[in-house]
Amino acid sequence: MEVLESKRCLFCDELVKVKRKGGNEWYIDCMCAPGGSYGLREDSYEPYRLLSYSEKRNSFPILSAYIREQTDCDEKVVLTYEDRETILQSPQIPITTEEKGNRLLRYLHRHTGGPGEAVVINQFSQSYNLTYSLNLQELVFITEKLKEEGYIERIGSTFKLTEKGWVEAANTASGKALKPCYVLLSGMDDKGSRDWLETVFPRLIQLGYAPKFLEEDISLRHDPKPIEAILQDVGNCKLFVVDVTDPNAELWLRAGFAIGNEIPIIWTSQEADQQLPQGVRPHIWQDVEELVRMLQKVITKE
Image (cartoon, rainbow, N blue to C red; front, side):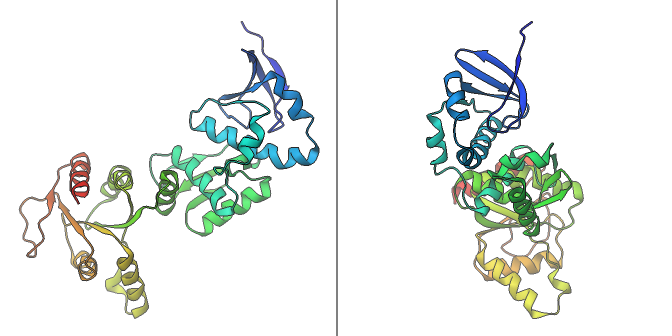
């Protein structure tokens, strides 16, 4: 049985088990690589250790964040001392609060199958490398900002991406802006809505759209300002997906906004024989897998 020595990780300052192999020291399960490991060239340990306190304070949290992000994405990381400047000067390292917040959204996105799914961040107070932050205070500030803006929900160390956060994470991870897309459902139970969130929404994201449910109950609004706000949102939208399986007045009113703004609409339904308004010819689907295939076929033809 291999005997591992204990050694302190330079970048997160945690005492962990180290395995020596091929001229590298492999640091196992520290805060830089929870549940995994990363390599450091043996001849690089001392140059890193001899850096000034100021240099360590400003660079080690960033290097720790880099290691954690790469290993979390299943990338093998072996650092040398020469890698230090390359990493610190890389344009991929986030600088602004917004960019750092996106890193947390991406982390949650990688560890969930859809919005509303819980992720427990163990040792949260030591996990500021998730946002490339230099200290816990900055991590807390970023977390609260994301919560206030409606991207995440948080109770203690348990985090959930909201629908808005899920789309934003997918958007930033793809590296390109997604086009706004509204999805209108009527008479859909919780399971049906969840199926759309977990199966249909990810495919719409892959096809370049940022989907969201249009849930404003506009028929009950008498103040013209909310109506104007909805009209403005609709005007910015690039696609409507409207399911008319069980349509009601709300659905037709909302769809009418889209028609009035000349926004493309994809009509869908699980019912083959329906009395529908002239011009509404839905694509019929039986299960969400068939629905996803149909949407991809229709959208890629446009």
